[in-house]
Image 1 (cartoon, rainbow, N blue to C red):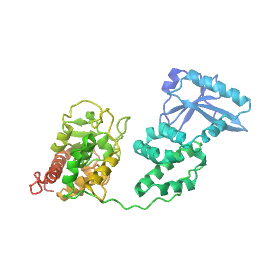
Image 2 (image 1 turned 45 degrees about the horizontal axis):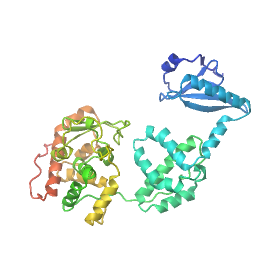
Image 3 (image 1 turned 120 degrees about the vertical axis):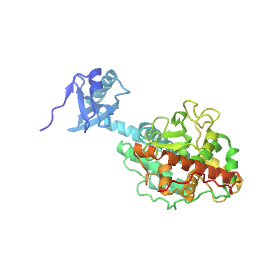
Image 4 (image 1 turned 90 degrees about the horizontal axis):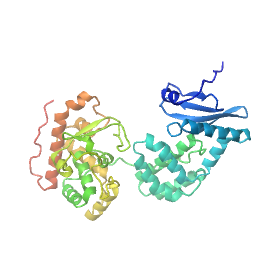
Length: 399
């Protein structure tokens, strides 16, 4: 038996009290033909105009309820009803117009409507889109791009890892476009990725003085790279470091993303002890709010990979080093100094071997302090030519 539509004379109170349920549901506006408020399990609400075409229901999304008021939604529904009564399939027209757009427009819509809300690493992916996809595909109709275009793109990017990451960014855009009925197929589907070997690059003891000296001559970008080396955290987390997350000698990273913080990779809160050499780089950690590492115009630093390439070139280092290799160097030092793999996983917030409960995170505070101070002391001793100095000043507690 077909359920009777739930109709109400919509008003502000009804909109405010429409709560999410296990499944999306509609409240039809009594008096405005075809207008309904759809509330989704996520809490999102949208205005829909629902009409019949060839005895089949057609759903046209007018807009998000938070951005479009009731009066405007009613006006839009009445205008759409006039078009439908003239024989126009408004949903088909909408899809047709969107499918004629360029890839640049599609990439922009994906970023603003989806990626920023659901993808913590959207900025990194968007950088690849702007660098590799927009110059090549930007002016092409999105629905004209095919697998041959994608394969040619993969051949044009020299670095296999970057090519794979760019393919993934493109595929995410097209997958979303398929769901939104903007394009019919994802041309990136079933395109082979390059085979890559897991990187094992770490700085040798003889390289550490060279790189630390170079970092100290490279301004705020060098300071960011040195902090990755001394703290062992992910480059994207270090460049997003905020003053309000530094408390009582700890860097406390929220697991969930916000508009100004990307969240941790595993979505769990994480706290890192800031050793003395890192404190020297940071200065007064009670500075207030905002990003810690900013350029002369107050913008957050980014694109550390390019700085590392320049440093490697100046040092004539043929086996190139990436910012993530600095994190790997820190992790290797943890195990080399006898603290073990579990300690490395805990300090670097790896899911494997990580400890997620609040009790255990704080229960390991003293041990984590010893690890961070010992590793930083060892790194700086090597960097300053004091490799013969005894740096293991905090012996590991017996198990």
